[in-house]
Image (cartoon, rainbow, N blue to C red; front, side):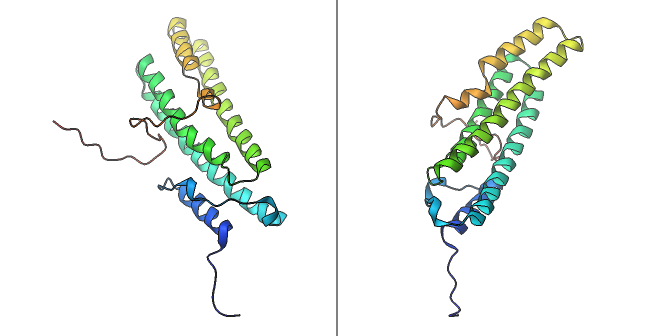
Length: 183
């Protein structure tokens, strides 16, 4: 043994990235190396998949918690729709990691399906919450307006719409930043 240790290679690069990404630290997925399927044995792939699913789950939970808070604070249909649209911004980054080109195709497909299923479930849960509002006696006209806003700004639109570089958009799960308003 020479006493020299490597940096852990591509595997360690990915694991370090995933830990920082899950903690909402600023990281660039474009710097991640490709991981050919034949590079590692099955046990290593299992461990890496656990790191990936854990990071994706952490980000999805943070995203969902922020979405619930934001939707509860929305006082009108415009605010509700705006929060849904901004929530999709956070989903683009999560889906992009799940479909990262550095991962083997089979893993990308499985992770993307996993994330898409979670998004679909959140959309369905929001619809069910509106049904519950009707059963509680909320004015049906208000519920239908909210339902129309929810469907017009569906979270599932992230499956087909590509993210644009909107300078005003932000990741709702990211930590708050200081805003300076001139005046």
